[in-house]
Image (cartoon, rainbow, N blue to C red; front, side, top):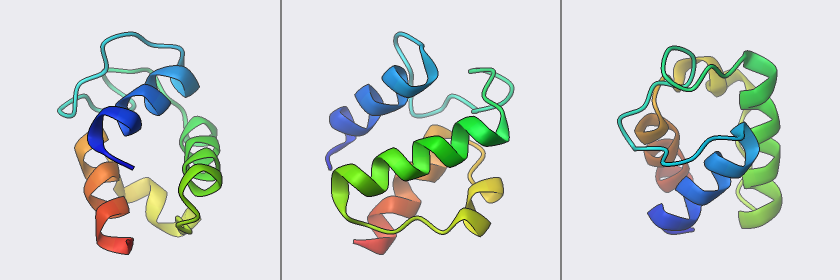
Length: 73
């Protein structure tokens, strides 16, 4: 999954437009923990890469999540 695809997935799942890599999930995008878990499940379905639920609270920004995903693939 490239960065553009990842950003589109985040936008769709969080109901936002123009998500940036520097956006913080909670403060900037208004995401709750369940939103992030759901995002992790969608990412896993799209890529086949398992995202550990335990790691999700540590992923504060969109860039953090994307870099984490890259580190797993």
